[in-house]
Image: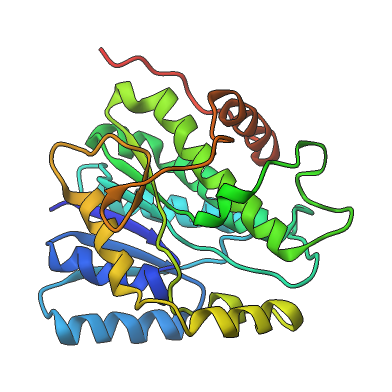
Length: 286
């Protein structure tokens, strides 16, 4: 049985993707923040799909120690139940913040959760992905097209703007996916970004306020149900052979920003390794 890990799996897009993949026969390990919510979601899925194979783990992925802990738990499950292989990793967890707030490491929270958590979790699960010739999928946004990386102040400590921080984190998602493909496509690991479009979720109301609440309240009314973009995650997870484009919307390749270059991807990779205290391996498939 193929295994998928999905972060931010207890609501919104992550939950819809979880339901899609269990319907396709995947064994899914979901990660959420709230134990009660995770258990409720699991029971709901099982009531609809009695044969579904689901495990939920709880972690606050904004904190790197929590990423490390849950990565260890996932690795133990994979070693026991799936020949130490991981077919799909969906880095979906994300947040919006109205004010400048930091993690335990002192990193701006949107950059920390929306990008660095994915960067670190993927690193920890890279051996299992390699064994399965797996796929890594990021939840992106069209908003990355109107942004550049603020290399001299990536945490936006000077003149913080929550929407700028969000857009930059979404640009980081696609630069990370490009960087992964540059390094590991030859090892069979394929990386993608899904542009879900405007989706009716609660992301804009979680630990936010003021302008962000107001804007999201207007925008979400025009959003599609999470089940619509979930089909793109399922497509990228299960299509054979693996699709080869980088950025997808409604199961089709889409155009992305001219900022998505090898130079910028490499620069972000080096910065992220430093911020996470890690170094991605160099492999050559034989």
